[in-house]
Length: 388
Image 1 (cartoon, rainbow, N blue to C red):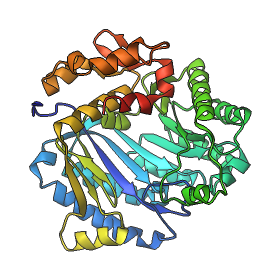
Image 2 (cartoon, one colour):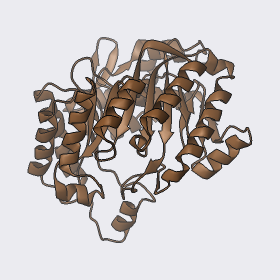
Image 3 (spheres, rainbow, N blue to C red):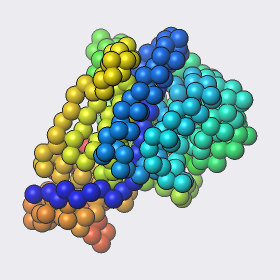
């Protein structure tokens, strides 16, 4: 039986801002376009949700060390609105003195003055959704911004005093050539961000992109070509000083995303806003995926929870293995055995023999940690599935 000792790690707090100027065809996150007039009502509901969780002992007793504003497009909010949210949060919960406060920004969605205002409000990390540095690829991805607006947004963040900046990129677009992906990587590192997230374009069920694929209008890149792109990404960014510390994430030393790392190391996290997810150690729960329902429930003094799942021990074991293997540091097997009170090598000896002894191996041991090899990174999902 797994131990139920209190999680000693600091917790993470996520705020979902679902509003966008336009919804991208590939996006599977809960977003709504052309609804900015609802923002004041949404933020009033958010304040009510914060107040309710501040009365729950489990969350009262947490020490939070990260705040993440995601979306959607958080940069549609004014600096005054962001400052108000941060002040309410810090009055409601306990935060570390060096809390990481990340704010997602879409290029072209804010001004230099607003960027300065976000920093003055308490934001100390900016994540910019560049996605590509080629105009036709931006158009293919249904993005509204230009390459010049990406550069201007980076410059605005630096002028405002941001010294922890992340750039998001997407690769494996249909018909994308390796030279064009390398060009975007080169343009990205030329801006000297401390962090880069490079995501493989995925075809999410129910998105306009998926419907185009189903209709034969769009042809996804083959899996073996996607692996070539991914392998090149790892090599290129590591060659330029970015550590590949998680499947899709790369950073300069000391600039790993502290917030996202919370999702991977088993920390508790509280998600606020429409569609946001939370985890309290044994239970995963999520909010309604509708800003109208979200507002209505909170106006009626109800938490906007849509569903929950109590994790079984097999589920917790698998998620711990999967999230551990997603990281360069790998799975801490001694910690795993302490939590679940099992002999890891005895229980998973068949999987370990298969994955560590094949040529080339997909997993290897580093002291008491089990980590993916370079070949293992390319087959991460398949490797993790072996432990399901």
